[in-house]
Length: 291
Image 1 (cartoon, rainbow, N blue to C red):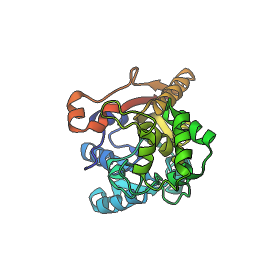
Image 2 (cartoon, rainbow, N blue to C red):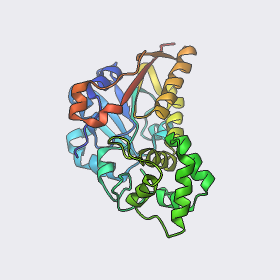
Image 3 (cartoon, helix red, strand yellow):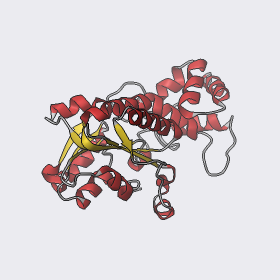
Image 4 (cartoon, one colour):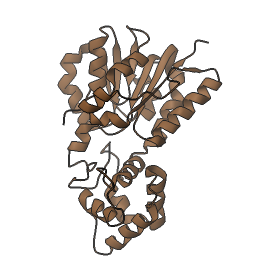
């Protein structure tokens, strides 16, 4: 599946406040949002972040097309302040982050994000050591249950943790499909959604420390924004959205931000038909107040 950027028009409307400004795309991925912004705003420049080696490869493929308008930084966006300083950037006009897994990552069965994956990995940056296989096969009952509940909001977290420990007595759980089978022994399928969805989500978030990374980005973003600069976050589940909503609210109360999205922005029905991934996407945006 070709990766289609989620709500590109809405994203650009909230993000771009200066047509010739410098912006950060914290989650370059397949370059969808970056390409859209460059096409729509001919004088915009972008610093693109991603910690996935495959995203670096895709950037190199598009580098001639981008020219000097894009600088790529292979780094976790939680390190945005230091990383921008390393490329001689001290302030920007907007920060965009599309939180989640790209279609390319799901489609690659060697990455371990899909239920059909050949392995249990789920690392967004393969330079990191911790994998889903290690967590599933070595963590205690208590730790597994806590991960599934905290990061997946899985109401059967303890039953699933018990089932995993029981299955481990017969040998190592090697593949994503094997893990899905264990979860399905505890939970029945309801509709089209796999019973293992929340468990896989929880493992991915835990392994990549996604919530803490997001919190760090949101904390330092106002320091990097010029007056009138904007922070735009696209999230895909309630855990992320709550973090963004709370941060914007606190910064608004402190007189740092003006919230641009009084209500969360979701994709139109027409887009959902073309790009089903956009169904669960939520945009929140805030603007740094001039002081």
